Length: 134
View (cartoon, rainbow, N blue to C red):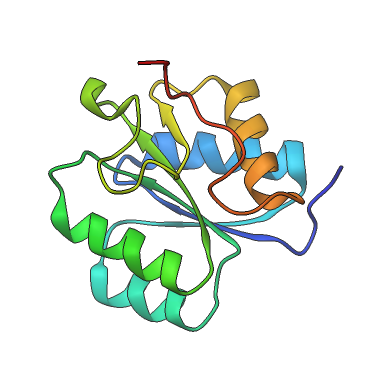
């Protein structure tokens, strides 16, 4: 299933990871991928104006400004996938347990599976994640 016309916004500070992630999603899904560094004002405006169907954001739970962006995306109806290196977030980010989490380094097949599920027919935040059983 291809996702032409679906817009994916990747918020990642590491340019190489952003490029690799974007390339993987473009090749596998045919999605229109935009890469951005974190800038709360710019990204808030993009999301509030319906810029993206899905935002993938690099996040650790203690980054309150990034959590603000997750809230804004959710309120705008944008699906969210959280990418992290933080082991404490592997089971979900407190208060956002419904949002799928993928742990770095990203397995390309798993990345595509999670994004497909979030862009596909099921409700945002209800499909797949790497959360481990308690």
